[in-house]
Image (tube, rainbow over all chains, first blue to last red; front, side, top):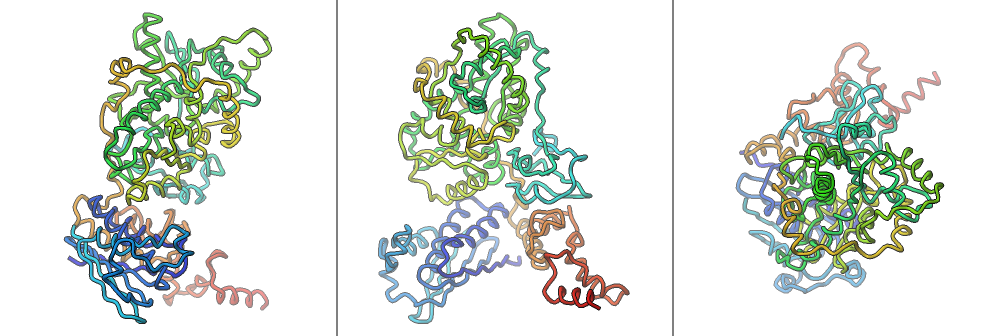
Amino acid sequence: MEPIRMKYEVRSDDFSVAGEASGKIKRTLKDLGLDASVVRNVAIAVYEGEINMVIHANGGYIEVEINPDKIKIVLKDSGPGIPDVEKAMQAGFSTAPENIRALGFGAGMGLPNIKKYSDEMYIDTELGVGTTITLGFNI
Amino acid sequence: MDKNIFHSVRMDEDKCLGCMNCIKHCPTEAIRVRDGKANIIKEKCIDCGKCIEVCPHHAKYAERERLQKIIDFKYTVALPAPSLYGQFKNLEDANYVLAGLIKMGFDSVFEVSCAAEIVSQITREKIKNNKTGKPIISSACPAVCRLISVSYPSLLPQLLDMNAPMEIAAAMARREAIEKTGLKSEDIGIFFITPCPAKVTAIKNPMTLREPIIDGAVAISDIYPVLVQQMSRLAKDGKEIEDLQRSGKIGVSWAASGGESAALFHDNYLAADGIENVKEILSEIENEQLNGLDFIELNACTCGCVGGALTAENPFIAKRRLQILRKYLPVSGEHYTKEQEEADKDFLYWQKQPEANNIMRLADNLKDAMRIMGEINELEAKLPQLDCGTCGAPSCKSLAEDIVRGFADIHDCMFCTRNEYAQSQEPGASLLREILPAPFRTRKENKNADSKKSD
């Protein structure tokens, strides 16, 4: 079965459009009739990823691949990279600047939430080059 | 889903010019323009009345009962929605509205706001006992309930499992009328004075009742002129007005957005109104972003029921008037006892579960859905992404879906048709390249047209 592929650009520094990609992905999954809990998990994880890209990485793009048994999502940016992945995975650890926190973002729950709501998560990051997070969701 | 399901929102083909206003505003993308006329896809329509509001040619209307129907019954009861009280200038006492309804020909009145106060009282209890970790969503707005069943079915379990105040009021009014007159139930006509088409639909087609219990809906806008006349006569008479009002501040406040929430006596709630806002909030609830809240009140119309398509007054003005009107009212009507609640259980709570409407799903199983989605995506990529609406569908995506489902053709897109012919060597093909409505011409095409003019 040919997987369904979609690609979305996440623009930098624009909170007003953050959530657009996860919203579109969510609509697609709902149209497919997927279980509400899968739809929710993907929507939450991708939204966190989108916000991260806006805050830390000057945007990036999101690739989605839907297979009959699995959804694969790649969040790719050319941002600064994550210096200490282990630390970044800790709940509450945040490097977001004050102006971002004032908006209610940057609470240090981005990566932990992505992990919580996905079935698989791989982080590939290189300082000065960028970060690629690959997520898997079982259907 | 039954194709012959009753819908209050209808089309008047004679008035429809086939413009694209409605297709762009429909929250469930339920309208297509075909052969110069708008068509409502019944299975998707939630009767919110948005298209009635935006149609500049008044080609959309709400089917409802005419007042004459009340002569079919030996005894009639009017159920005024609290939004009715906000429609009158300089009104300081809602008793004029109630007495006016009786002057118009109803035998008695039963305020929907009384039932609303009961719902508020029980909701407070339910919130206290809610251990799901998820907010309870108000089930009072029928357009919101239908929107949830069509587009957010996973939220159905979060709906407050009580019938709407209008339905509870109807059951109580009927019981009262039978006790008072000794007549049979079928001789008693219960009529809701409605601010919106969604409630007309809900009456004919209740989502959570075994069968309809209201005999008809009369629009606020229809009775308004007669009612105003009767009310001013009553005022001119100068006689003391009969005290018919039984509801207090809480019940009357339900007419506007935030009123139902305020009746909960705490602030851990969210109240949103306007169908687009409601959609965003429902999506946030699905994503579990609002789990810290106890209660979510959603109204499809701007400002709540006072913004319904069948009201007479601007919603903000009506809302303001209610603030004055309720000022001297007691907080609430009579306290509703546990014994009463126990006795009324059958009509207070859902008699049947609301059903999910899976019309938005592409197929019953994932593989078929994926195949269809693949075809839709492939087609969508060929479309210009202008969402211009000239194909009659609200967006390129919805046209792609219509084509795959067999309801439309790729040639319905004028850009696809144009490109196909423009590339051909047929005589006239070059002319076709230049014929496009102004917004869609590219700069180069404009220049060509200009230089032709000066030739």
